[in-house]
Image (cartoon, rainbow, N blue to C red; front, side, top):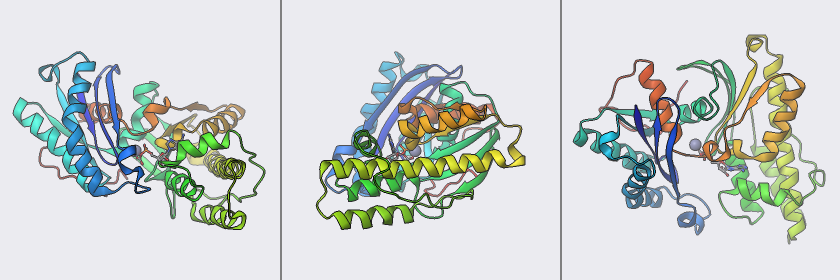
Length: 333
Ligand code: KG4
Ligand code: ZN
């Protein structure tokens, strides 16, 4: 079976063709980064218009890279939430229109489920696993015992983790989205230069607003930031984030409810961060837990994860659903 996935929940217009035996035939992502750069963040209305401009080209590109035509597609899936409503309407309307005109089934997909199941596509992971879902809009630890069998263990009480990277980057005068720029600047910085405490230690929940304030106070103190200051602040901020995540892992592994689970999976854009991946790898090695981190380009938003989630959804008895309205707040648990 060949599945066409479409993703348009934020600022990436993406389409991919994936088979039900886990071959990614194409994976096209058009980033609106340059469009939003001027505004220092994603502007929802501009994002929706940019999705309208690009979606047809991106889908055609995904089909041609996969060396197939629309007739070869067996199932069409699109992100129907959570996300920015304008983009969701563009992606789901496009997918539904294709499905109706071609007489193919359409399945709406939850974006978070896409991130949560990516490693099953890219790394062939079996259930069950612990999951850190670390993205621009979400930050939660979960236990994934099977398709649809998800429980949230800890969640952020304020900012999402990617949001905290983006806000810290803005304070440091780095471009958006901030995560990759902080990671790059941190390479030439001293992670011990500034002591930012890791918030909410010893708890399952996350909180990042205090860390953001700590960076702001330090930036105001220095006033005119040198290149080295930016690198040191980035490295120290990233170190605090790593400390927080390692602490959450420690809490999870202490919990008797998950004693049988020996796999930890990363999902979401922040999962692309090499410093976070390597500190988690070290901690997992020490505790004989396997860390499964999908390739960076499948941690950040993509449509292959949407196509794959449709495979799992269809396999688990969810029929096509043309009536489903895009839902900006759609939760998986
Ligand atoms: O999953 P994602 O692509 O979109 C959402 O579902 O939100 O995540 C985007 C977030 C942004 O906040 C971005 O700054 C962050 O992921 N991000 C990173 C890295 N790459 C993307 N954060 C830290 N290090 C990275 N290398
Ligand atoms: Zn995402």
